[in-house]
Amino acid sequence: MAKPRVFVTRLIPEAGLAKIRAACDAEIWTEPLPPSADIVRQKLADCDGLLSLLTERIDGPLLDVAPKLKVVSNYAVGYNNIDIPAATERGICVGNTPGVLTDATADLAFALLMAASRRIVESHTWTLAGHWKTWEPLGHIGQDLVGRTIGIAGLGRIGTAMAKRCHGGWGMKVIYHDMHHNEQAERELGAVRVDFDTLLRESDFISVHADLNDTTRGMFNAAAFAKMKPTCVFVNTARGPHVVEADLVEALKSGKIFAAGLDVTDPEPPRIDNPLLHLPNCVVVPHIASATVSSRNAMAEIAADNLIAGVTGQPLRAWVNPKVADQRRK
Image 1: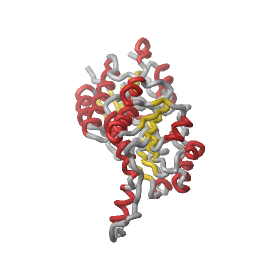
Image 2: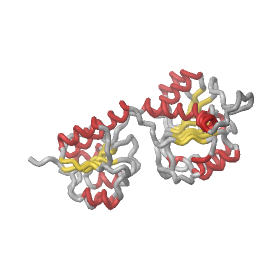
Image 3: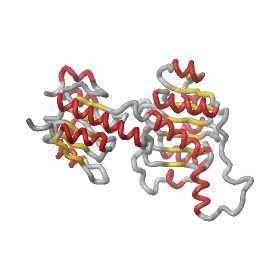
Image 4: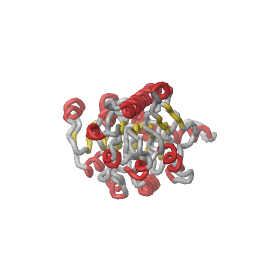
């Protein structure tokens, strides 16, 4: 019996690829840059399954050229690159990789907070440039962390993990803005749910962990930055479009806020002439929140399991649209 045919849009860890190769007739894109939309369209014409990344836009017109496609397995927690209603309407299962990168992402969010607050990258660059001549009483002074207020935008799994690090390790007060109460965080961390304006006004540090949707897109704009403390440090490890980047640049240049640490930009990657890359008070890293051995391996295994389950008619391990079960493609 012929194996189901699948297309994998990038090299992922062998923990997942080995499973896929064993169960499927797999074509794996091995180039360093993602395949173009035209190439993805060509590859899907005769495929039963697709393993995609956030770099691929999976919408209705693309799905219409893939009459055999049964599953889209996204190698990511987020899936805003996929038109879920369009996939569901066509009987196509969609999977993602939740839960396995919570600690890795929270660790990086705190690392960015620390790096931006204490001007670590700026100081490192200063040292490499040969400017370190003596100890300077007024040199590279950053922000204190102990006992300050951390504001979390989106107190889900990752936001809660970030709050635990700030509260447990540095004794920070936790406030958060979310559509829903997080009763466990309120009970265990003393977290206080506040409106968005209060979060902006009272936070010494703001860390973004919200989902990207119509209500959160562009939520950090000029009006938001104007309400922050001039000592505030802004961290985003969620999605680039949460931020109006031109407004962030102006806030950093003008001193409306102290510094920023970013794992995500809009677009990704940013152009080399993007001002954010050249501001001394902005730390930018290339979307590495999940980049630990255990996290990336676990993501690969879940993505592989979702792909294989989708092409063999089994329930997905992490199913974004389970309501498609009764109408999924055979």
